[in-house]
Image 1: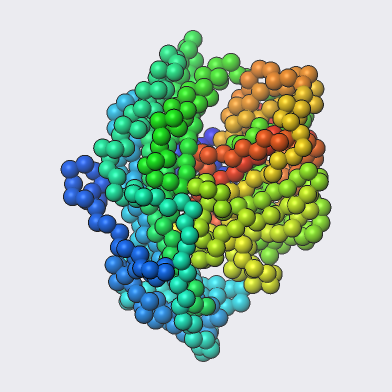
Image 2: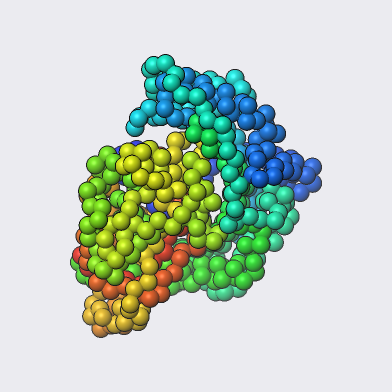
Length: 528
């Protein structure tokens, strides 16, 4: 059920939101390998150390690329040159390393480097956007001139003096990934391979890998905002193929965090490998569940993918501003039972979707979307906050400098309820216990969703029974939300490598859920 990149782009362009979880981190297509830069592989010269940061958060990183505050002011002035009422410069330098094994041998080791700027100009709700892949003054001014074309008048504003903001990082690392060679990474992923093969004799193939990312961003705008952030990311993954009785099964697991090498502990690696094996071999005893509509209990943690996709997207402010979302006129109204409180949070320590500041430079926060069943807020970027005459929620996110920011989720989860998880399961006479999902898709307007269930269990007379696999869960997010009638007390955050697709952009996200019971979900086969 992995999505091809073509399907991802097509669905995103049609206003469909997609979330994916990697079997081997290739759900949306693996990027092509490029020649690694100096220092990326053992034996090469060491990579250049990043420029030191100035005191008090003064921007110094991009000075090494020729961009100082004087140039930023000139670029913003060019962006305002045709009567725009706001201009923003987004700079990004990102270095990604991929190191992978298949059957104990290195089958991928490459680096991707991205450096560029995105220039945005606003005129009311309209926005012009242009980007360049070099940071010369000529290129930056040209991009600003292109973005300025959204307006057609004489300039009326001068950029305000910059006020540099220090960012207190919730995920700072002592040693950036750019200073860690492959020689220190290979033993980690070889351990995944070894532990997985030792866990079960039926494992015949193992793919393991580590992706690490070092990103630095700067946001400067005509209101005087000037902010920078360093954003590390680490992803470990394991994918297994098992063979028994002439049958093969495949599954996997991943772990991710905004962290450095210290994230990759032996305890984490061992658990990741054993979970990947368990999720694979249990499929030998699984069969598709019977089709029909019956109660579904969502397991804690990974099942939060359904909350993210079927409900969360409808609370992003751009869909409501455009009248697309079913929640467009529901602020202050009841949309769920009293036990349901949903938040979108950028402050969770080192979670994959956490950010110190968003991609508009606004500080992150914990945004309460639904409180005791009442819709309290949308997720706002600058454009929607201006439209609704409210504050930004730190939700303006973008895949890279090549894209304008839009309201996006960070870590979306439901808070604990009053019920013990065992009580929730015991309440179901016949139903489905959904544990591991792969991909999901939702049509924002009506909230209709389809999710692929990799594996789960049947519930018979209040007890967990046989394993099931290869099913689609189909329903309406708003209706499922209304029919949640039991919420467990065991909230668990999913720590794997989830991506969310929207408007042709893919970003890292996190989610979580306690055990919950809901009705009105149709369960169908693989092709349903």
